[in-house]
Image (tube, rainbow, N blue to C red; front, side, top):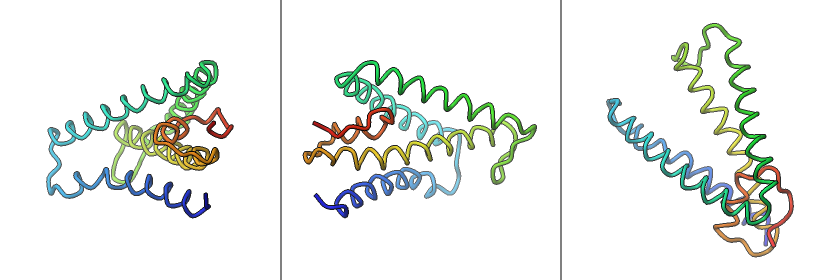
Length: 148
């Protein structure tokens, strides 16, 4: 197992994240209908991944999963509270509630990307990488042990 293999695997996840924006970038007009379709697809995939991660993580320890969920909720609550301190938040050309939503999404995705990268490294730590372990570790920030 080389550092380069782990790096390439992490790079692949980053490229896949960026590719998710391509369909909306290719459309000249962004209607609410297309945005709703994109939201629905993303929500469905994230919900399925979350259920799989909770299941996989619970096999290693329900307490750890519970702690991770609570820490994740607390982090989002703190981030939302910090963002609301600005009376009229701005994010690019967005203002107010739209800017707050964009800041929340970008912040959450940035934190997710960091833990995803850590998860790629942890999943290779046991010498036997698997997609299931890769996914379960990519969101788990509470478990630092290598895969069995």
